Length: 77
Image 1 (spheres, rainbow, N blue to C red):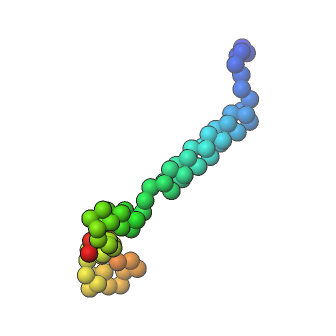
Image 2 (image 1 turned 45 degrees about the horizontal axis):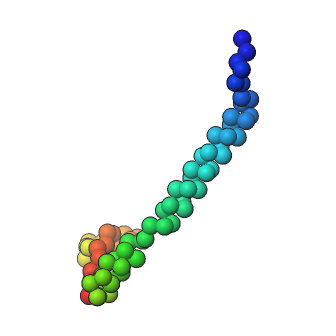
Image 3 (image 1 turned 45 degrees about the vertical axis):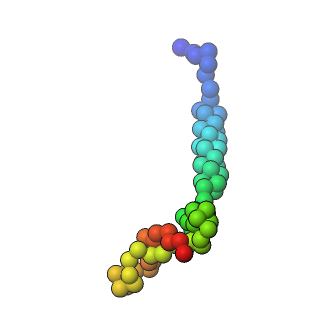
């Protein structure tokens, strides 16, 4: 039994890989268009006529020994 629409396996693999690479590239490009939390904070506070910075939520004692400072929130001043 032969099929009229037979696509060789190698071609199917190449097409699938190409679609995967194109989709991954589109997602990376779309993510680069979104502002970072720091940029979003500055823009939000600029509308209010203030300067904005990201400030850690926890005190330094609570994050002692950790590599990072934990979550941060936007403060306008």
